[in-house]
Length: 153
Image (cartoon, rainbow, N blue to C red):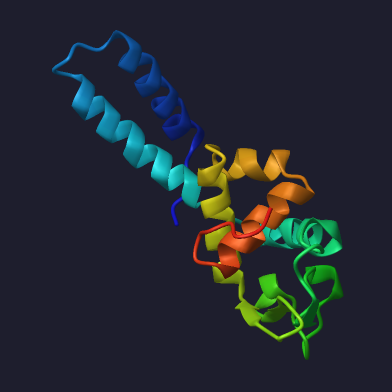
């Protein structure tokens, strides 16, 4: 994933402003540029984001539908070489109900879930992360485990 420089973010803002004053002929091209830049912005998810959003989900946001969790710790501060956290390459297993419906979570799946939840909220990943609470963390975890969908709550 490429990271945006401040100049590229400024360019995106300028395109949005230009959109308001664009002619009908310029509009499709401007919309395509904004869409392309916005998709790249939504892609950037860090390991810290994975850790902190998982903390929110595991310490309250998702407790109403998860029976128990096995495997890797959800926070890198609790990971070890033998049992790394999700952001360090470990895998968590979320058991959904008493019938032991298991869902495996890796860092990449969680990053995809964060991207999907940010998109569902109409925010960039960075804004989603900055504003996240337990409900948002639950949404990101569900999106990670259920192919971009929020099933509960």
